[in-house]
Image 1 (tube, chains in turn green, cyan, yellow):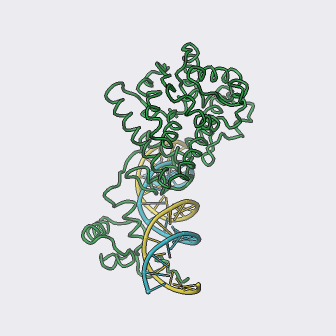
Image 2 (tube, chains in turn red, brown, cyan; image 1 turned 135 degrees about the vertical axis):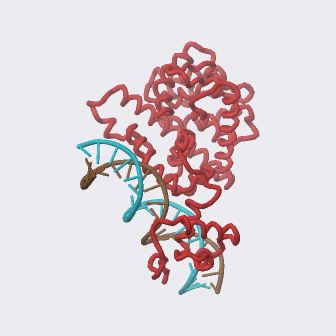
Image 3 (tube, chains in turn blue, green, brown; image 1 turned 90 degrees about the vertical axis):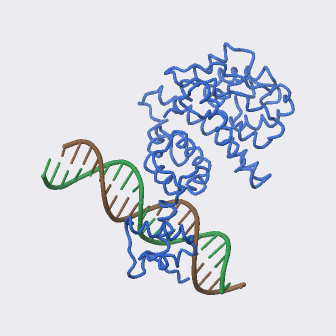
Length: 341
DNA sequence: AACACGCACAACCGCGAGAAT
DNA sequence: TATTCTCGCGGTTGTGCGTGT
């Protein structure tokens, strides 16, 4: 195919755009639309190839582009989406209003990737670097924390990816629905936070799985996201307490939602090893109002390798002492570090 | 003051997919 | 159906700027 590379075309300018060129391009597109990019430069009086014009427009001149520093919320969204989608920058950009794929890509490569690496997390796989894990000479406490953080994130992503995949198979639009749902919930949570407590972190990542899950069954469990209200979490303190953490209420859905919940929990804990002994005779998590917390507590005490994802479950239960002990101990030490990296 | 170095970001490049012919 | 064209995407490069020596 004799594809012509516009960069090779004689007489065309390359390199940085001048303000005059920007003005010409902007004025032309505002008046006529871009139409065919190939023919645009000549019509607009630019000594550039169409491709160069298109890039300049989409990455810089477009009026709906937001420039400037990325917010913490955007950071988290990018990391989360990258874990799910990989280097599909355009797809990631699709969920970050007013940000371009090029900008996100640059930001990832210059900031986020390094940040994750510093945390000991492989920015490609989002897994803990084994080299760090295997190191016997490092700070064992920090390594332990990193391990838990990475494990939780891995489990969370597995669950989310699975749920999204399943949703997608039911409806091609489910992925967008899930993310839009998350965005809407986040917006509501932000509004809630702004009107009441001020919080350092707007997004309770612990709800991500629930959101994805809710997206699968939006009509059946309307009340599900009343659980774990972020407004109850005060991140402003240096040693935050998780007051009233457990508000997840399975009343009325117990039994009906058991299988779905099991799927989520199995995804959270793919090996499901700890649950088998801790939960019930079925070798699985028994989802009953009241014994959920016991399951977690047993799980935590049996295997510290599995608690991170669970400790973010912030379940309502009938054992407040254990709840707060667990939440304060693990959530504060590990999850918060992840959130505040 | 001059140079080296690293960082951030805009721009370039090549490829593939899909539309048009 | 085959070929050509256009566009969009993701990886890479180039350049300007700030900082340290």
